[in-house]
Length: 283
Image (cartoon, rainbow, N blue to C red):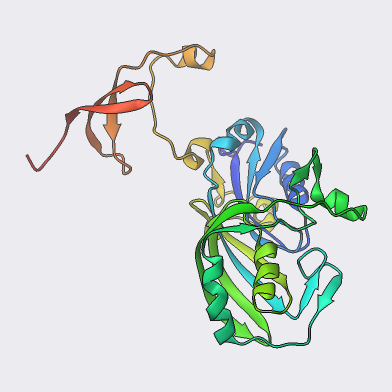
């Protein structure tokens, strides 16, 4: 099914399902020939997922996913083998942290930081995901990965459970943040809940649900490929040449701002647009 050429779907993932299960369900409901997803979420996670259908799957690398936002809950006092509440407890400490102690260590987790991925993660070693080694009882020594935490703020703290609002670079593990924050406080911690609020410029408030698409309601969550790609736009007259894989010579281009307002004529060369004639209403 092609929803008026809109083959990119923002959907709210419910608790308990894998990202692959979500993708396959959407594919089946919409009778799509091909489907993929952006931004894998663990089964315990809820929130925004992007599912890409049919020919739009070839544009996945061009969709902005550099920044993500989450609300997470951290439970102090225990550490698990999966670094989340679904795992088996491997360390435990009967201690209660305070909000003052948390505030003192929070800055350690803001900016460019290094973190070690969880043992149960999809990152690969010799072509095999870490979680497959872990399930076989083999723990692979992992190198720290550099990630960036843009913002981190406390929402609440109650009964040894901390709720944080985090905006970060892609590839950041919330489970690692929970584990490492516990250790920084001289105790243990694990991730007990997680919801993704946004991926790039796409927000959970714009997402649809299984219930809506099952009932045939397609008025929310569907995007065309060009709506999801934040790149300069070229309108070409020789469309057939382009579709057949042939080059199109581009010299001068009409330039518009982000609101679509005409601002001048540019000359395109070597990947750059040089202003040739600029519309300046102040002159």
